[in-house]
Length: 369
Image (cartoon, rainbow, N blue to C red; front, side, top):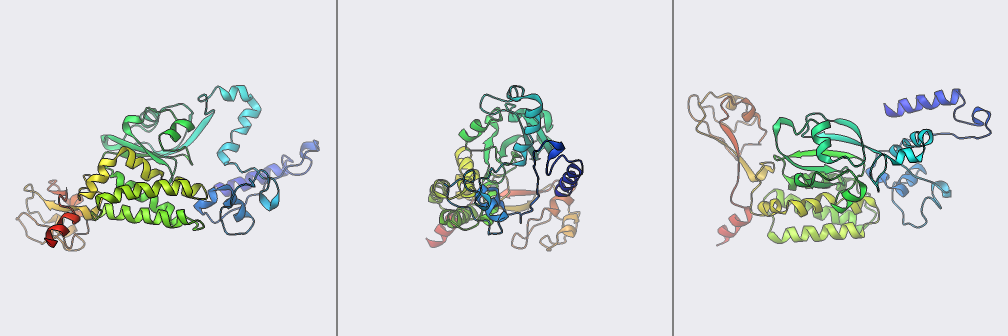
């Protein structure tokens, strides 16, 4: 839809001689062309984007030479986001001094965010630089949905970092975010409630960047895959204590040694969750996921509040709950797929998700003895 509208706008400008040759008889010529790529995440890196436009595979290149010296088709090329270009009309009309009055000392102007996650009012928002994350969440987003407690904000898109709730008085500022291990990035702002598992959040975002890696450099191609393997072990209760240190070491090396921005920023969700929520990683090593997000580390159980109405048994798609009218029901954990339909159907809140308290590692050691 955006591409269709932009193309229509360009044609209108061309008809009115606002773009093209000899604009408005001024002797100045300027044109705009829309080029649609294949949607690869790595093409957010400027040299990969240029390669894509030239018809090559979207691989990043070593710099220098920088695109500003030798870019598209060997010519000097400036690569900017649409959001950056959209600031130009305001500056041209109102002047740089007026624009500089908006924002902070190091970050001028406004910023567009995609406000999402556990928030009452999500959507695209535009705020002046310098506003705090808490103000965005409370005043614009209406607070965390279902009156849950704020746990963290994941900011900057898939490669962004997680800022814990107690630091959300931080101002929206490029330098401030970088110091906290996050980044402004593409402007994604995902609100996370106390019911979110931060280890699973890190795994979710890393799985995306792992799939989107172009594979050119070893640190990104292999390093992110190995990081994801460790996170899978952690979320299944099969990790060892030393896996946490190994994960952190891998993340630091991938960040330092990758060729382009994708590999350098992909570890951010892992590093920030390790920094601010390390205790959750340690709990996962012991087989505990307190939020009940990691399915292999929780089980569904029926409490004494059950009246034997059989609604849950009828709703279960895998027959994990025997049909026993007027008796307290049971759940066969071997069959249960944890779809949650039984919890939705129960009118007495008699079904709960319970964290396993014995880790896979401890069970294995006991069996060995």
